[in-house]
Length: 287
Image (cartoon, rainbow, N blue to C red; front, side, top):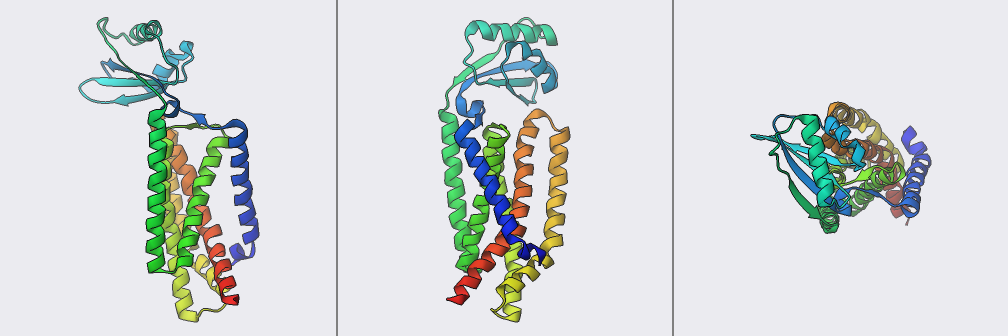
């Protein structure tokens, strides 16, 4: 019930954070990764697995700020992405440095791919379409399963979670790349599940007690679901946090937005969705 009593504080916190994110976007923009800016990708075969941190340290003199990915197979292929468009001479210097530092055979060859920002734009466009289609599908499902008001609130909380995550990336200048898009799509599915659990509890209370005192019923429903929501989210947070702490760089850049999104989704399901639905239901009843 305390959550319902302090709903204005929770609404204000979310509004201020989202507003700060918009201000950061307007003033500084996003710190876009190579997936969105274009650049060069080098593919170099290694004899054995080499830690990405060592490769990044070896390339430090070139000031590339590279994204390094590895693919295991018969040979360990290292993919080095940089937002710079590297000339032939620069690429050869990089290869020579890696040969020297990691004792690669002299006949080691690298594959080069130059790419523009169109790929990033296409990824963004498809992600927006995916979120829009998923939101419409969720709205229709919740409308038939519950009521239209539940669906509207669910979409608002989804938008809240996405805006919070976008704001975090803008404020703290975290690199936006393909992993960020993948994490958003994952969070959309994760967040709605927690919200529906609370909505289902609210519906049970309304059926059992009646359609009066929506505010009290919503508070009871949140209290009943609170432990379940926190424990479920905490379990997921611990796993993702371990991935971020102990994972390689390519895993960390996916785990970070996922971690922020899970926390934001849990917060919105508990502190935003319930009170917002109660406000709508109460005003509808007063008409």
